[in-house]
Image (cartoon, rainbow, N blue to C red; front, side, top):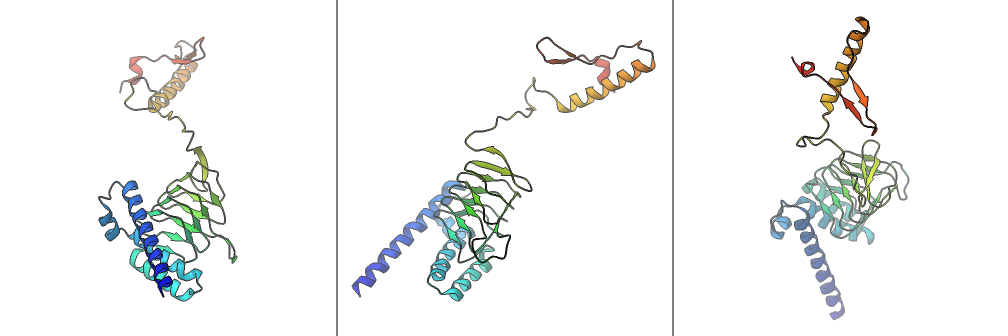
Length: 252
């Protein structure tokens, strides 16, 4: 009897430690979370993960019907559907959570962040592994769909509403439908987009207008027999282009 009590005590302490780690990870990653008590009482993503730990333990012990019962009760209460057979790593944070679906053979690593509307689903009717494997510290954006027996490498980011149907390496940044790797998190891509607050940045709208004006000038010169020179882009010796425009060209 004493041995049983000691085992139960150890399991209870382990569960309490895990729950505290869950709360600490949410407070760390969600700027809206003010304290652990608020998270424990009011965050449905945390409740869904805790309920899954119970249902998963029942599932592994062969109590399939009770496991599904706990899972469906959690789905009703939180709007998050996690199959009891799915394997979830420690400190999983499901933010907002409504509409999240995690399939039976999905495997989710440690410190993963999943936003609302995400589906970790399958693309076949096989009874084997048919759901994704998500690496550690992956972020899956709102509405993203990760489908099939594929692997998302550690430290990757899946953009909102992306549809990923193939495996990607570690540190990948994925966007689009179907999902495409556009960068790697460890090698940031420099932002070359024009900054509106920079006086020296090119103006895309101005370049488009100047191109149209150049075309009009060329047509006028052609019609008038070349009397009016069409001022347009000229190539410098350095290889850069320079566009000469009159102030009148921008008058309305």
